[in-house]
Amino acid sequence: MYICSNCGYSHDIEVARYGGVLCSNCNKIFTVYKPPKKLLQTRFGVSFNELPSNRGNCFPCVIACIMELDSAEDVLQVQEYYDLDNINDPNNWYNMLFKWLMQKGWQWGSLDGHQYDNSYYFVIGKTSRGTSHVCIYKNGRLWHDPHPSNDGIVDEEVFEYIKYVGH
Ligand SMILES: [Zn+2]
Image (cartoon, rainbow, N blue to C red):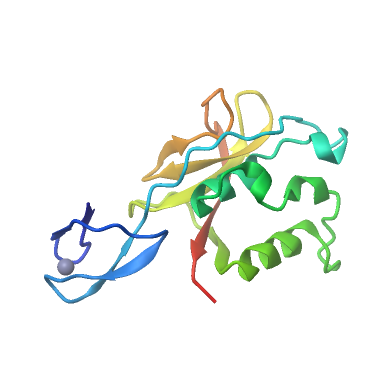
């Protein structure tokens, strides 16, 4: 069930991913946000000093949730490339992730802060465990923590989203 953001009319529809829907009541397009999957991360290392293959994969996990993939392992394991953070290097980790997403029709961008439009977005920051982490939030509240503790983010630093835009 999705409510038109223009006129409030309820639509009994199944919608794939994020998308625009033509409201049959007011004839305007409204955007729907399908609830992401709730997957747990599969790797838990907390230090960059660990082997890259052991580092925690919270970021691939929240991406997999929104892309409705089966596992965090189905996403580029971007944490393995965090050492490559030279902005001048085309193979730095964010360029790699940006390309990986773009090839699948997904846009990755930043937000000014919490969103209150029923969308699902990423909050990146520090946990009560002292680690850097990312969780999925909705309307200013924790919606899914890919870590089993479900503690969320205590020190919020960065807000981002991914959105399906097609090719
Ligand atoms: Zn409407």
